[in-house]
Amino acid sequence: MSLRLRLSLTLGSAFVVIWMLAAAWMLCDLRAQMMESLDQRLAASARMVSGLLEQLPVPASNDGAALSAEQLGIPGGLACQVSSLRGEVLARSHSTPDEPLAADASGFHDQLINGERWRSFTLTHGELRVTTADRQDERDTLKYSVLLAASVPVAVALLGSLGLLWLGIGQGLAPLNRMRDALKRRSADSLEPLDVSGMPNELQPLLDTQNQLFQRIAQTLERERRLTGDAAHELRSPLTAIKTHLQVARMTQGETRDRSLAHAEEGADRLHSTLEQLLLLARVEGSLSFEDGVQCSAEEVARLAMHDASHGHVSRIDLRLPDDLSAAALDMPSVLAIAALRNLLENALHHAPRNTRVELTLSTSASLACFQVRDHGSGIAEEQLSLVTQRFWRQGSGEGSGLGLAIVQAIVQRCGCLLTFANQPDGLRVELRMPLSRESIGA
Image 1 (spheres, rainbow, N blue to C red):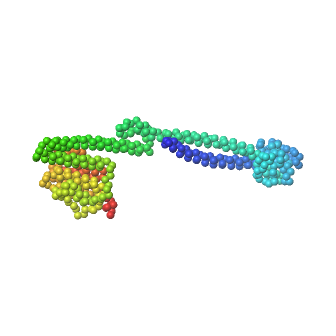
Image 2 (cartoon, helix red, strand yellow; image 1 turned 120 degrees about the vertical axis):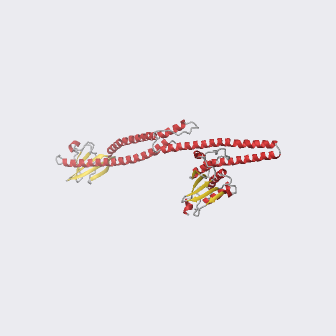
Image 3 (cartoon, rainbow, N blue to C red; image 1 turned 90 degrees about the vertical axis):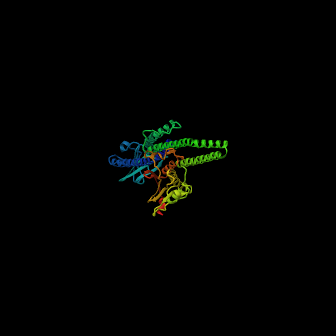
């Protein structure tokens, strides 16, 4: 069922119920007022006849004399009867039935005469009773005519309202139809933002969300294309080197063969490391979860990262801890926190002179843990600082996969961290700020 039809049925049903209740209320009130008006006409006619009797000669007995409606001065269609207090009919109009009207008591009465229902009103005036009456079927005919005349405009108005409701809903949904048509006209690989003008305020967030979705899909596809291209480019060289060294080892003997196998093993290790880095980068930039339920403090992350970066030999890394270091857990997956700090330390160890040590300084504030890594290398040119987190960027002809700092940047963006680089006279200083868990701080 279409949205337009669903809205029309829902709102139309509400309109019909409301209009029918209002019409029933109005018609019932109209019927009551009309019946009251007819009763008032009977009473008024009886009073008028009572006043005229003082001027007209009334027969002394029921001798069959009849007075016309004109003589009695009553409206046409009404019956009138004048009787004594003893019940003798003294005069009647031509429209009065042959059987006398009941006039025993004053006021309104419903009676059945010759199979016809009558509505009568009796007024006592001195020694006389004046009774006026009209047929109930004439009243019903008049009632139905009035009710029908009142119902037709209500029905027309209801049908008109439903028609306008259908047109109004169609006009209100026109922007959605324009969005649908714009989407149908797009090619399968088009990820450009939708440009639909005249969108109402209620639908503008939907259009913005749709365009943001296109943007995220475009970024995902670009990331996948870039990952595929980079992997093909970076893996081609180690695979070629491994194949070459294995071919040399197959054709040689002795020390040359051992050296070729060692080079092939180094190439395999490099290939394995590059693949691991590529997979980690793809997972960090994707939507995969790293939550494992393990929470680590800043000091624990620092010591684990030092161990991984130095492969168990932490003698080249100096860890400096303040006395007031917070024991609160980091508000991010421990796997990502360790991976980010490990890559910074590996990069510092790679660029620091072999006879120098890398400094890791840890401090905490109310909501952040700050890791500062400083090497004593040659640093990086200021114009190249903005390039260090790009994929496969290497300083000069340096070794490595060129993915370490790119992974750190991806973790920073995913977990709401802060990464800064600064050249110092004695080397490069890198600051990595990670959020602390509020629950741990409160505890």
